[in-house]
Length: 130
Image (cartoon, rainbow, N blue to C red):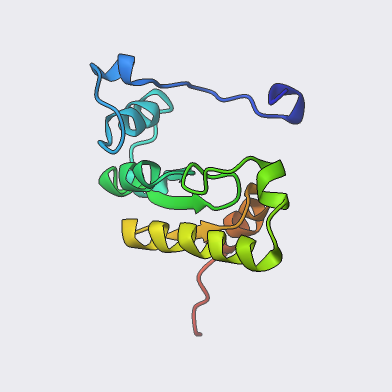
């Protein structure tokens, strides 16, 4: 299903490939960057749905992005989340946001749908005064 929606990862790294070292250590992210010949970790973006994802990105000197809806932290299916009242949904989202903030996320998005706008924002040239 993901491939039909355009998701085709160039590499897939598991802790088996790093001698059993997993998140939040940076080993898997570093190996992925190496396989993609990325030499500057600050140009890497780690997007995840758990505190360990954020910590892995931080430990690898990458940009860390937490996704709220559908996250591991929220722990609810889409159906269960949609059954909540708007106030309960807001409370759950605030809880996830706070966890990502405590972990040191650089950016926090409600959903992956917000990622293209974030990338556009990050990739804007820096304005210079002439």
